[in-house]
Length: 248
Image (cartoon, rainbow, N blue to C red):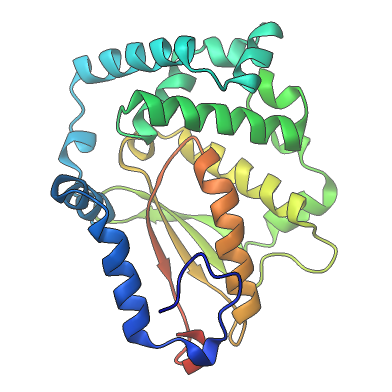
């Protein structure tokens, strides 16, 4: 059976039943309650997130702050503290991470540390001190942003979630992986400023170019790199594929 752990699986060897079995195997690792929460989140029916009690946000933020004090692996959070970062002192900033992981303090603290590491690696010390600005992107990255291949749609889904659309090729030969990740980080930071998106997460729609198996694999791998670092969770992803056997 095909596995996510396999480095390369020849497309011709993958059967639909293998995919279904793999999904079932991964879901079987979750408790009944966890599966219910995942399904509700995907469908935009996370009631606790949609109707967030005031006490929940204050208690969740306090739990996150306590976890940040006691967690051992926090190199970039400590570095931000040493720089007297006004960003990490901002309750609204920390609340984004608490909400992104449904007020699980351990997961939220890890997400925040991952975010600070990602920002430091891609934007230097400025990424630890303040939100990134459009002027932080270079010309190639601004051109990539203006191309419209990745954009926030002006509408929302029925649950009120923002929709990020990725249509066609994202960039060309002159755009490095770092360029793409920096643009994606800028887009998701902008999305995270919306309170409803902080609570409900956002939806991603990907429509890659036809006959682009390699591009799809790269997109999925890049997603694994950046998703754990985002200040907002992606609650659902729709991958639109052509009716080609090798893409299934």
